[in-house]
Image 1: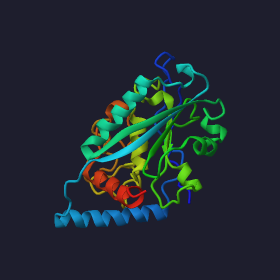
Image 2: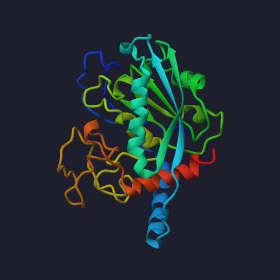
Image 3: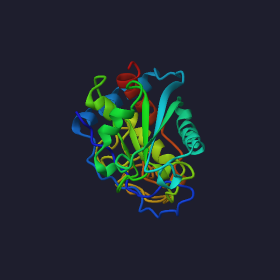
Image 4: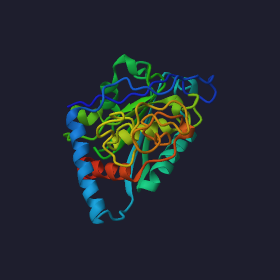
Length: 284
């Protein structure tokens, strides 16, 4: 079964040399995670809460995730999406800095570069053709595809699920990200590399912090405060659910804040990532 990608709105050509683009910010253009996946998250929440109450949450070893970066460009110029090694290294370092406190680290196993104008525009509909040609590793391997033209999106990724190796869902897995969002890119307010941080959070099974609004189970993580809607910018002190405890988690990587505003995942999100990893990816 396909999960609709969680989509982040923006547009820009990737390049430190290209003119910076003023982006309108993040907005989700896809449906929420479906009922089946939400039930999976809620079941994990019950298990995690029980483990916390019983004191069975113990320190664990660092989990290393193998990563392949795939650069898709219209030409071999930076302006057309041809990301240099220095920016890919910076992107890897950004991922590791964000996830290291939660005992995940990323090991870059390879980089592919493809000049293909059709694949370079996500709206052209070549996602599966591109991924079948380029994807590497197993279901525990993270594949990130950088495109210079994401239409109205900053990026998207797919949640963990039960898939068979070689299936359509297996090849679809991974994250597609706007080239301009890597560290030093031209996406104004979104060029510190945290679009990839955000999308990889979805790859680990996390929802947006504003999932569900002010009522119900929200994102099914107990320590992310309720949030009525996505953040724009970095509005310190925002409280969109005043009847609920806590201010909006504007610094959380799973909100829609500016890159400079991001700085954390919560312990509950860490537990959720580990739950999804152990169940769906670790043994693959």
